[in-house]
Length: 139
Image 1 (spheres, one colour):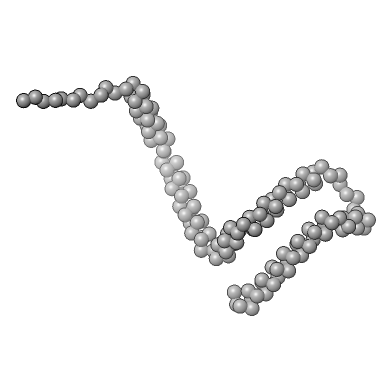
Image 2 (tube, one colour):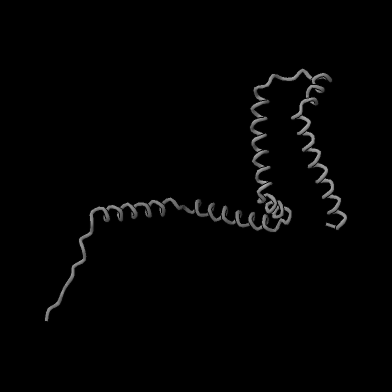
């Protein structure tokens, strides 16, 4: 009767080193988690869950997020953020205006100003129509 006894392969030095590093990491994490840190983490998590609950119950915000998910609205937001960046740079480098009626007339004659006013006017008109409709429906 013969018995084969297999011995497990010898542990590689790299494996032992990795185990030692993992043990050190776990010990450091355990030491770092003081009662104060655990309490702050629990508080932050609780506040985060409360905030998430409030946000998901806000019908208006949920509707806004759904609208912002539409590709045309995403492109609009990208254009809007680019416009803020460029306007900030332009304003920082432009000399101050003298003011007065002549300066205002020059500004009004600028096609970019006219388009900007048109955009704001269109948004205002749509917002006004939507608010009237909402109040008529009792919302």
